[in-house]
Image (cartoon, rainbow over all chains, first blue to last red; front, side):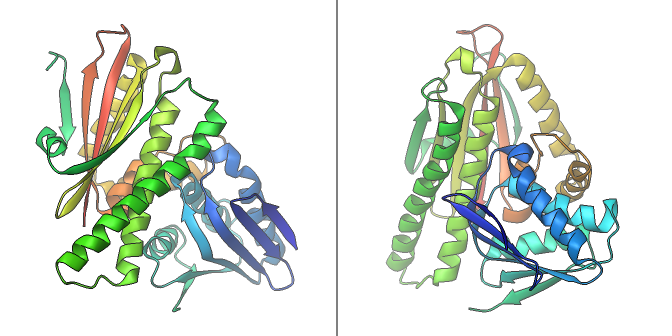
Length: 120
Length: 199
């Protein structure tokens, strides 16, 4: 298990289950502050290709625009920059509007991205 | 009104003079940027909780039970907008000019208005003005997608430019700006951003 942790957030990557879980609130200052998290995501994608990688954002309470930017960089890295053969699945809550909007925006950038909207 | 005052987008000054409001004032030199950055989240949470409380009691007055999800999603929207506006004002604030930035939240019956006023260097105001003109002359959804695509290849750029676009595209916010010269401190300008969210 690889983790990036702070008192307000936690990102965990479990290679065995091919799942990355986001928890807490991410309000970091700009792209440089998000670089370690983006690096973890990119490494996980490279490691899991050509299989499946699940990104679970249900426990993420807040993401600022720099965080949205990190997510867009991540899906563009897979679909465009590296053109990885990877089945990418985002898991979000259906009742949390911003989570659904984020997955819609990411799907515009990566049409093969799959979204699983879960109900509470 | 100073001669050099210019308005762009949806900026109705009259909306700032009505209704209940909450204002927070920030001094740039008061504490280090890292500490003030952390405070953005706290301030945004406070503003969002203040709004949620107002919204729920208003729904109860109208004998309408707001479901928890609607109230919570509105709270998330308020926190997002407040936090982005605070982050922007901190990023572009002219620290040397010691201009106090302020954010005001105005509660109207059918909408919520945020107004952030900030002191910036004239050169930064000019760059921002160009960005505002670009925002107003393009389809925001296309610009949002284009900005996301472009910034994905732009490795070290600190500022993504997604904040205002996401307010428009993801939260259906209406935005307006006021640019004023600041005669008290030559070479600086006062920029006010107005964001209106329908509730």
